[in-house]
Amino acid sequence: MKSNVGLYFGTFNPVHIGHLAIANYLVEHSNLDEIWMVVTPHNPHKKKKTLLDDYQRLHMVHLATEDYLKIKASNIEFGLPQPNYTVNTLAHLTEKFPEKSFTLIMGEDNLKSLHKWKNYEVILDDFQVIVYPRVSTGNIPAQFLNHPKITKIDAPIMEISSTMIRNAIHDGKDLRYFMHHKVQQYVEEMNFYK
Image: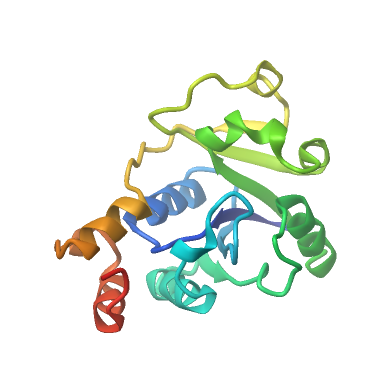
C-alpha cells in the first residue's frame, strides 16, 4: 500500500510554532503517514524582496523538524522552473515517487481562492485536499463546500504570522516561544530580520 504524504507548502519566512503545531496535529489526527514541509522558492503572489534566501529558509525548517520523524523539510520545488505552480509540483512528485500518494494541505483562506489557482480542477481530480481552519476565512465558494476530495480537519486555529515575527524581531522583541528553539537561535546568530 502506498504511504500517504501530506504536502504543506509555504515560504516559511521564518517557520514558526503555528506551522509546526498544524503539521503535528494533521500528521497525528488524519490518515497521513508523514508531512513534507515544502519550502517555496518564490510564490507568484508574494514580493520576492521580503524573502530570506531559499536555502536559509529550508535550513530553518530542517532545524525545526529534524527530531520528529513524521515531518520533513522538502526542497522539491528548488529545481523546478520559477515561478512555480502547485499543479506542476504535484505532477513532478507523482512521477518521482510512484510508491507514495500525495495529499495537499492548505488553510481555509487558500480554499477561498482555490478556483483562481492554475489548473485547480486537475488538482481536485487527482489529489485529496486537507483544509485546516483559519479565523478570517470569508465565503468559501459553493463548489468546494461538500467536495468529495476536500476534507476539513478541526485543527487548532493558529493565528501567528511570519510577518508579525519578522516585524517583532526587527523591533528588538524577544519571540523565543514563537519559534522552535533551534530556529530562534539560528535567526539570532545570523542576524536575520533585523
